[in-house]
Length: 272
Image (cartoon, rainbow, N blue to C red):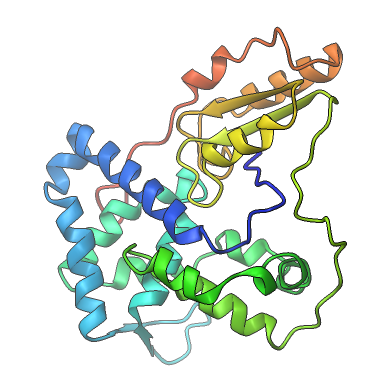
């Protein structure tokens, strides 16, 4: 689910993948009558929120959950964009993005902060383990000039590459075999799932992996992000997997249920 070929250097293409996913998400909002009515210029809102923060960070006051004294938080452009990027991993979080960026464009960053301090995917990742993997397998092989060029014209910029490379400069790095980045080729049956709305490993990556796996099947879930969080009938994927395991083959699988996996409605207010 949400696969990447071994030669993909994380997070070199994070910004490009996220820009694609954001474009799709905003397009869905524009085509949805309720979302479009609430946010008729959602693409302009997105641009304005980023431009506003690019000129000057926002400062937002909030009351911590422990009810201590109010605190003031500075929200920088790159931090704002990176948090929004992570919310696209699951459609349960992504449903609130149009509302959050619309409010931010009006100078109201309270909805952003409220979402940012609530649990998200990044809170469930073991950062040490993540760095141990990517600092050995990925960041040492990223051409920083190439990264800057690839990401400079995206809304998400080169922030993630810069920060992850910086973290890896302080983290122990393991050794990998010389052929580690070679594509994996095998006749073993493989079932590959991709989410069309995935902001980090889009369907393109699943196609690349499948190319060298002749007995594979690549199933694209139209409304999924990096997983199926927030979608209706998540058991659809489990049923396909069990059928695959029973048959020992990726052929002749009924995958039609993925077309019916629906995303939750867009939030148009703080309470919806």
